[in-house]
Length: 84
Figure 1 (tube, helix red, strand yellow):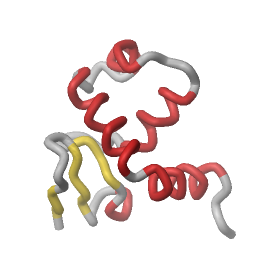
Figure 2: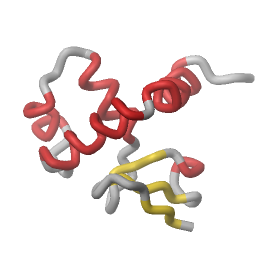
Figure 3: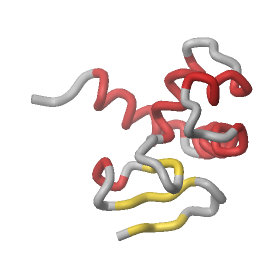
């Protein structure tokens, strides 16, 4: 089931990544954009690494992260240190 958010480009779909927030129309999770940004890549350069995204989508993901840092950090941690 697709769930919209208050952010134009961000949705949650229970069929994709267990409902983790993603960019609408893609399977790209917000956390992936955040991780690239944390490596020091400027938002304007992220679409060069992920050409299926627009700059608007990148900024939407970073805004979403800014408003929900703890939750997105949990997703990142689960990927980096999965529970056995």
